[in-house]
View 1: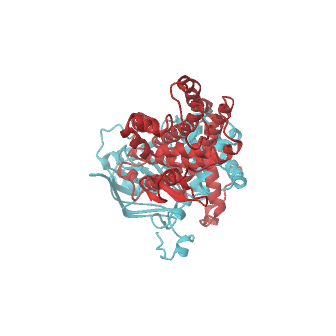
View 2 (view 1 turned 180 degrees about the horizontal axis):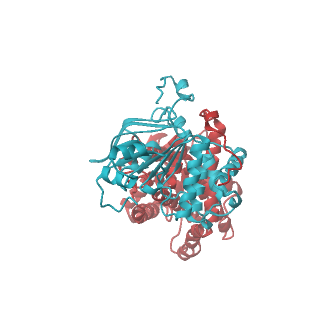
View 3 (view 1 turned 45 degrees about the vertical axis):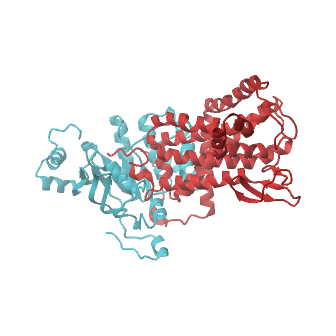
Length: 320
Length: 265
C-alpha cells in the first residue's frame, strides 16, 4: 500500500479548543453538503417545483371564478386567486422540503450516515441546528425559483417584497424544519414515514389559510376555523403573505375594530405611533414554535436524556 | 494504564501522555429489560491492533455506540486518550476515528467532497482539509480517484474511503465495526493491511470488531465478547493457553460454547 505522505503523529496534537473558525467550518460544511446533494439530485429539484406549479397553473386557474377573495390585508385591492394562494404554495414548498429533510434523516439513521454527524466533536444542538439551516437553505432556493416562475404568471409582488420575504422564508423554514427534526427522532423506521404524509403534511396544509382566507373557512365550518387558527402552518403562510408586501402583520384601527393592545387569546397586538395596532401574532407563533420544536428535537437526540438511546439509537439499535 | 485526571477543566483538556487510547471500565447497557452489555471492561493501548471478536448479537455494535456517544453510558466509565467521554465529550471525540458497519458515504458526491464534509465536521478549514484529504486518500491508495463519484467505486474501495475519512482529523483511536463485511478476500486483506499499518506506523490504537476468526493474527490483542460479557482479554497465545485448544477457532468455540455454530467463520 502506498504511504507516500506519512501522516503526522497524533502525539504532536493536543485537543483543539474549537474557536469560532472551527464552528464556522463545521456549519458551512453541513450546509454546503445539503445544498450540493440537492443540486446533484435534479429530479428532487424539479419534483419540488412541479408540485406548487401544478397548484398554481391548474388548481388556481380553475378555481379563480369559484373562489372569490375579498380585500383583506395585506392586499389593498382585489387580487386574483393565484396571487392569494402564492404564499400558501411557498409554505407548501417549505413544508414538503422539511418533511423531505426529515425523511432523509430517518434514512440516514437507518444507513448510518446520521451517526457520522452525531459523533462529530461539537455540541449536538449545534450539529442539528446546522443541519436544519442546510435544509432551510435548500427550501429558500426552491421558493425563489418558484417566485421567479410565478412572476411570468403575473404574480408580481412589489420588488422590495422579494427581499423582505427572505426572513419570513427562513423563519418558516426553521419552524417546519424543527418540527420535521423532532418527528425524525420519533419515527423508528422509514416505512412509518408514509403516515407522516397522511397525519401531518395533508392536515397541516389543508387546515390552514394556504388555500382559503380564514374568514371564508369560518363561514363554512367554525370548528375548522379554530383548527386553522391554531395551526402553526397558518401563521407561516400569513407571515410570508405579509412579508411579500414588506409587512410583518395586519395594522388594525382600534376605532373601527374595538380591540386592546397586548397578548390575548386573539393575538399579540402592539400599539404604533399612528394609533393603529400592529398584529404580531404570526411572527410570535412562528418564533415560539421554532424554539419549542427545536428544544424538543435536541432533547430527543440527546444520548443521555432523549428517546433515541432508549429506543435503540440512530441506526435502529442493531446489536452486533 | 489509565491515568486519573484532575477535575479541573483545563487539566482535563490537556493531553495525557501515558493514557491508553481507549479504556472502557465496567460498562453496562440495556434496551428495556434486555441486558445487552454487562460489566464490560476493555483497554486498547496505543499502537495496538485489538480485535473485538464476537458472534452477531454479542454486543459489539452496542459497545461501539457507547464509545462513540451515540448512546449514553449510564454505568461505568469510558476514556479516550484519558478524556472522560461523559465529562469531556468534545476532547474525547476529537481523538476518535470511526468506521461504522453500515456504509455512510454519499454516493452522489465525489470522494473528495465526502472527505471535505467529514473534515468540516471536525472543524478543519478548507485549505487545511485539502492537504489532509490528499494525505488520507494516498494512505488508502485512492488519491488518483479523488474526483470520481463514490457510486463508481467497488465495495472494497468505498471501505478504504471510509477509512481515509476516519483519519482526516488524525485520531489516536480508530474503531472499525465489521469493516470487511461484504468484501471479497482481496479487498479484506487490503483493508486489514492498511489498518494494521496505521497501528504499527502511526501508533494508533485500533479496535477492530469482527465475527470472522480468520481476521485475527497471532500478534494481535484479542477481546472475546459473548452475550454482552467479556470472556477473555489478552494475547492470542494466552487465549490458546487458557482454553487448552490448538487454534483460535477451537478456543473461541470452546469458550463460547458454540461448537456447532457456523456464524463464526
